[in-house]
Image (cartoon, rainbow, N blue to C red):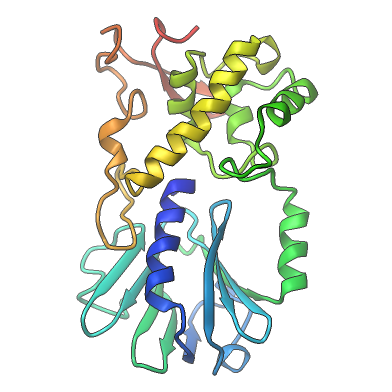
Length: 284
């Protein structure tokens, strides 16, 4: 599943492509993936594209908002006569054959361009809300702050650690009620940066280690966004390009290879059912 930097990259690409366009047609062939029909959105203009956690929000006129979750295998494809932009799970020949057997929702704009939602396994969804409903939706999820927002302070992180001292570091970082957008990949990289094992209990962390975790989350996510995300097996950005941050990974996906710093072999373990890569010498 794409994490915060990848979804943010898709958001920025779509923002450039679809803001200002008017929806002329909409169709979805999988009822479980949507909650609206053409009559709800026809004639509405796209006025913005936002991100909350790992979800995309397409703001429309008339107090309507389309919420998109790519989940594991979702993909958004914008196509005009001059270009094709892809974001999310790569599907072979996505721009050559549209719609295709994986296309489940299609937005056609008044200028003839289109936005396709493709999903190989149909885990994702496209839903319509008004402002009150979308606020309630996110409130019910009890999401933590965005890690790059002013709300994600060192004091906040310490407070949450005091509330959940028995949590393992990796599970704690990945918990969306603590902070949003950090998944398996970036949690491994943050633990390496902070020099802590992913299976440590957060209540046993020193003040210096907590600060390194806080600093690492911000630094690594910013660097990944600047590199347009990480491509590791199945992610491309909104321009159909691979994210360059994969070249900067220190431990994720490097099991059995030498640590860049100490040259010991990168190990792996299960933490809360998730595989975690780490360096047993650099991380304590």
